[in-house]
Structure formats: structure tokens, C-alpha cells
Image (tube, rainbow, N blue to C red; front, top):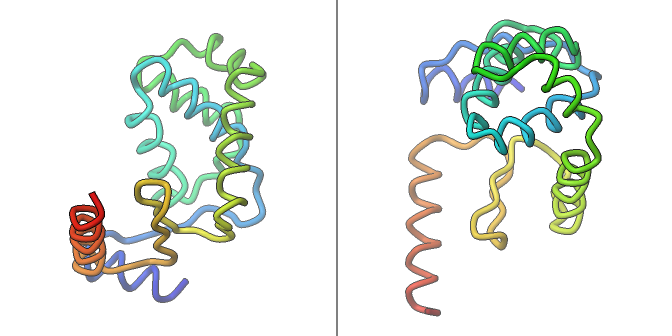
Length: 142
């Protein structure tokens, strides 16, 4: 965690104020799938990240998630119903299955083209270098 906080501050100018540990984020993930289907996935995810990583809020709170959903233009009641919708739950479960098959066992982690895994907090320059290496390798193979 100290490395993540340092990189966030020095590389990205972010002061992190992490929310509580040990919470269940399933509803936030399911909500993100619903928001994505409604065309506001990026805005919803960014608001959830901000709530957890900058405002130290507990993103397993359904009232908070509904408020976030409404702030990005979603209907609160429809959002609440979507949290229980098997379609979105199954999409999250499919993502989890894919993560376990990599095996992805921690965050942060980035997966490029479903075959390159980068684990841990990385400085921006390192990520740029990794993307360049992947592009170069793909052009040689392609």
C-alpha cells in the first residue's frame, strides 16, 4: 500500500484516501455492468472509484451506489433492480472466472489483449513501456 500511495501521488498527482477494507464490492461490480449497458459505464466506474479511493466511502452501501447511479443519469429504482438482475450478475461472474483463469489474484492489475498481465501499482512510464513492448511483439507475430 505505501508503494501504491507513493506512485499515485508522485506519478499521477492523486492523494488517495482509501475506503474501508473487507467490504463486499459485488453490487458495485454488478451496477457497473448495468451502467455500461446504459452507456454510462465509464462515468459510473469513475464515480465509484472516487467515492472509495478519494472519499473513503464504503462502496458496498446500496444507498451510496444508487446515489452515484443517479449522479450519472441513471434511474435509481431501475438501478436497484439491476443489482439483482441475473444478466448482470452472470456478467460479473464471467469476469471473475476469467480473472481466476489467468490467475489474477490481486489488484491493481491490468490485462492487455486477454494475454498480458501487469500486476501491482506501476508508474506511468512503466505502463507506457509495457504497452510499447506489447505492440512491438504483436506486430512481429502479426
